[in-house]
Image (cartoon, one colour):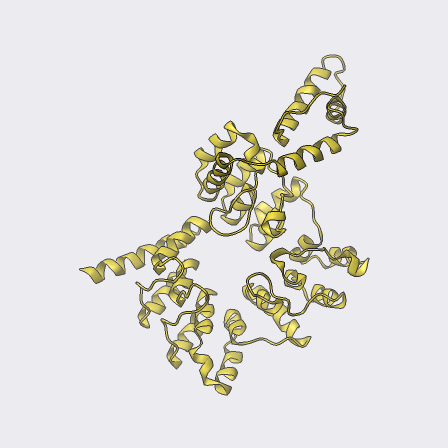
Length: 393
């Protein structure tokens, strides 16, 4: 009769058990390999292969119910990872190794990621290495995080060293990863089966077209019927999403335009396209009063474009979006001190608060410092705090 597995086995427990079994077997058979020890362990628990045992443990752990204390523990661990509290994270893993792959609430925004997702997003390289060394699943459990895999996040957040480490640890490259890598050869190979090769889901709940990073990929996805204008859960259609890539998005947006898509002033502001904006403003002067144009130009670091817009009469205190942040809030989040100074000189209110958190631009800079680990945000927060202090004197 096979042995019963522990109530909540973890992958780390499974790996340690296999190593222990290898050590025991080598007493009698010095040349025995790890794969043989893994197979012996699997059969001891009633499984035909190591792969099936591993899959069972992964599934059981992923779907195991957690009580309120467990949920709080996972949330605290993910926050320690996101804020770089190394001693706390290390102690948590020593006490409960299974936390390394636990799924829980994001410490800064929505979704249910794992610790590896959070470490990548917050550019915590030391935390990333701790998690890998503690048995983090390089492919991730991504269903609760809009199907964003750790590898996809390294591409989105421009973390090439983390990306290489994941690949060297065997991270799987699927169609979405190949699209974000801009690997046309691999994309072509994966799409040979046609529409059937497209995933049944898409990160962010929108069109897979937003994941394309080359003109070839755009054309192939359009051939297969990828939705042209389907917005994601934040209301961004593919062209809008690609315009958010900065300089890397310019050729992609231009290619979409050649395929009959239409861009508006907000997209041109993100791309820093002054000529296009000038044509639009000449045709419709009301565009100059659009808060979204100035806010996006500021948030994407187009200093000369922002100066030009302000010279034409754009309001430096215009608000946009659901939380109604100002251009100064956007620049503060990005840690762009030059842009912050430019907006302040034009009359932007350093004490303006958004409608969601009632937070000033300085508070946004501090929040970004914690969430994205961008050291430039500290200089922005200090500058804005000094302005507030001077105003009180």
